[in-house]
Image (cartoon, rainbow, N blue to C red; front, side, top):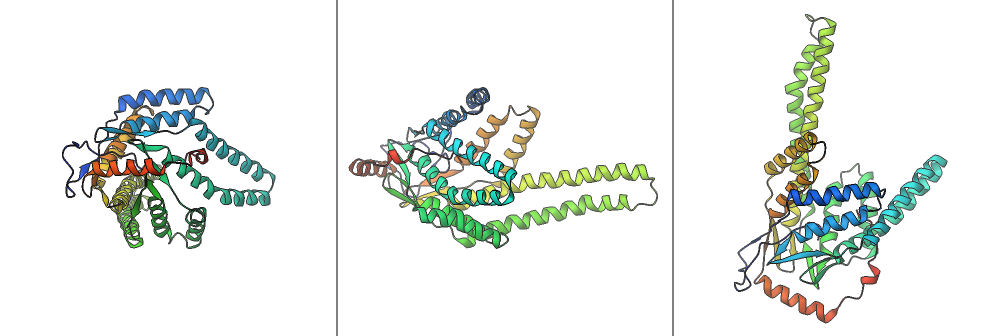
Length: 364
């Protein structure tokens, strides 16, 4: 699945009622992840980035292993070599593009067209790899999705969005999420997505309104005094210049902080919107993230990272992921244990015959 998430442990002897949500939980800690993070960083530097594929596998396995439901952890089976293939492809495309830019504008444009033509296929393979290599209780997740759908969602719609001057951005966002969720499965059970285009436009418009209101408030609070200083007649030039420089710094600093506060609000609205409209057959997901909490975590994480010269980064990642995961719940339709048992039986009967095809990950 797209989010590392788990359900709170549920006794097998007590079937879960359909009106009782199972809260997700996450047991990872900053100190544990710091040791993984620092080793991954050092080895990636020493190997000039080659180890980064193995680093991703270690990191992902830690997050999956820290996630459990009914006493069983999720598992990640990704092959570092497959991830390395994807990164080599991405690196080669970047190198070829830069060489093309140096040669001529025409060659550069041709290279852009080639990348645009190949990118949806790469994304398709990456989605298949990510989900197929995720499992719970021995049952693999999976991703269907026809290639023509990939090109519509990841190529045609983004191009149309650009030509619409980004008016279609919420529409494209909704179509991408709908495609990702509806084409995902757990064993033989399929996910579904009911979020409407209108709900995405409401979320985007709400964030835009908050940003505009904040922008106006900053201009009124700091722009007015700054204009008064610049147009003052009773101050010498040096004093006006110094005060103006301070005022400009404060104005841009306030706008910078505003942007950092807008992102958590947007992330909160989108996560709640997406997961509150996602189901696994008749089992519903719920998300109750609070933007005030996300803003607090984001701001304190930034302060911690700055004050520790980046060493707080793994702790910051754990804090945010833990809150995102534990803000979610599953509202099962009957007993979750019965659902898992049925899924295991179905998978055993059908089997998996596509493992050899899923050996490539763009590592997006």
